[in-house]
Length: 448
Image (cartoon, rainbow, N blue to C red; front, side):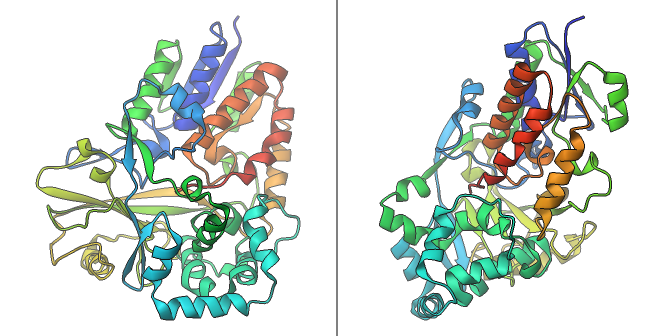
């Protein structure tokens, strides 16, 4: 009988793994097991007013790993101008950030406060520079998010940007959160990175002026991968859940697992926070002409707001403007209903300058996405290593993707990880070396 592989999950990681396996081993029997009735995972569309809305703000950066574009070269990719805004003190500051517009947008009093906070922080300039020069998130000593940030940029910047963001997303005091959050996510959107970029003369690289997006939305990207897999003979089993007990009946098969790492490890403290999405319909002309708004301040429940029609004109609705409002689970818990509080959200959008007038919310759809953000508590790395060590008892078990590796990363990262896993399988036919190599992916940086 030909070798057989089971790919668990039909998100971007699982679909790319299936395609890559089928391309490199044409006599291989490949099945994709997907627990839901449709493929896509976090890229599966949410239908609202007849358009396939994304589950949040998804885009591909020009400096992304090229493998994603190579695999989907038949897709109609569009280069779209970046028109984002960082909202602070009711000011709209262009994002990606540029040094002088950023300082002008903050206003003189905030600039002075942050400058003094930086000068009188408890550490030297060298530590601030090391924030961006030190690429590694992997540290045995974890001083915690709060201390890590304050020592590098001072109290004023910490209070203005970083503390509200962490509390909003994770719902915990920043002192309990790992430095990993600062290295993996926050520093890449840091206003201070712009200062460094201006001295290094690499602003174009660190802040691209455009992004790539499929003409018909991310749903078409999933369709493309699915069609490629089917053309290569991959079998899809929708509604088919995977459990570790299935491994006994799959002896001799390799398993490429893009489900949640925490579902494979007993008694682990690793966990996640979720994300609420509110797709809101407003009358045409109600929203400013920007694609994405970033709102770190605690006065706003949402952390990011985006307009899908600014990602692709084909995703517009005649006479309407559609906003995707992202509210991190944080302290809300996983069962909150925001629909009775739509007026509060509308007023917050108006206060932030996103909604230009008193236009009403004409329609709403709420979606909750569980287990989106890994909970990087202090000490998480030891728990992660124990989880990976536990998986070594399963032969030919290859965790892949964002969920499988307990990562917060981009879709092109997921495709590259799947590629590496397939190569490891073809080389070794044993997953131990693959599992021993996974720590390198913890240094991946989230781009937005």
